[in-house]
Image (cartoon, rainbow, N blue to C red; front, side, top):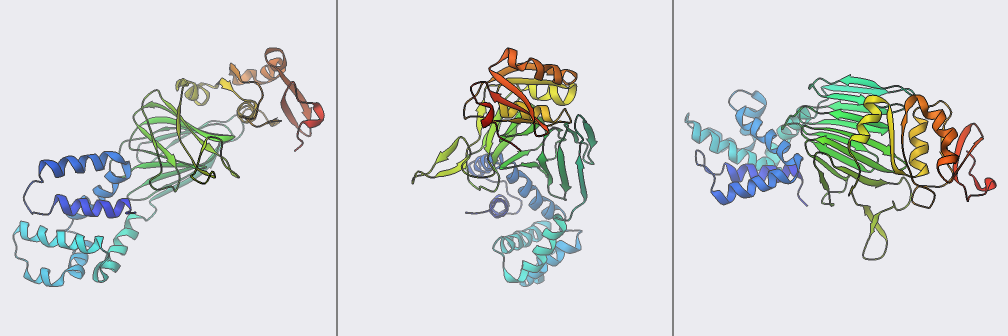
Length: 358
């Protein structure tokens, strides 16, 4: 399967095949469909455009043209169209990884992939941190959360290692913004959304713009495009098949599939922005993980979400977490117990001795 970079090289050659001539309507329409299919396509194509535009002044790209097509370089005249035709053949040689241009091409890619900004931060329990990034994007880290950020000349990447974060991403068509969160890979160009890592799933809520949710590292796998007001989830299990994973032809579980869920996207923003925790038919696992971000003593669930137990809908102010835990047995079929340095939540039908220990 071709990589986005190889496809971009082919499209660049196709669109610039005849110097000075405009591509036909069919080519232009097919190119637009390819560009819209994946934000990475636009980023890789923009890199080729930048190389094209910079050929007259950049020694690095001049060396590339010389190495790829020395004979053509010797025959070139001073006319712009002839020069661009030589460059087109040079790009073709690069796309095919011709031996002559390989070293120069790799050098250019290394320059593109050089880290220009890096940041790692973690927030304490109950703490929220606002981070202003160098591209004018703003990242708000939720409580008990951890991120690592790396920018290069062609990509902006964040790893959400735990917790939740709100992203207000400045648009940059040449550098897509990606977030890795467990098994999920989220890709955007410019939008405002949240990513929340919960037990067994990653949840993405979009305020405006378009967000692409897919399985990390699974080229060609199904993906989900989320628009303003939509919420998507992707199962995320560290061991075994994730809930919701699609069975393969042999009955084994394949990669988990992203799915659109019926939730109010605004609920995910209220926790980070205002400290209002909203549960919408939440299982005990989600409740335990979320409350643990707001109190020193961790909350544990005796059963995993999706394996039984009550589902609870409630709104809790950050200052009322303890009151909510005290009231939980009265509003739902839940038993709350203190043991082993943690607060345990279990369905009322679960015998006390079956509550798991740390």
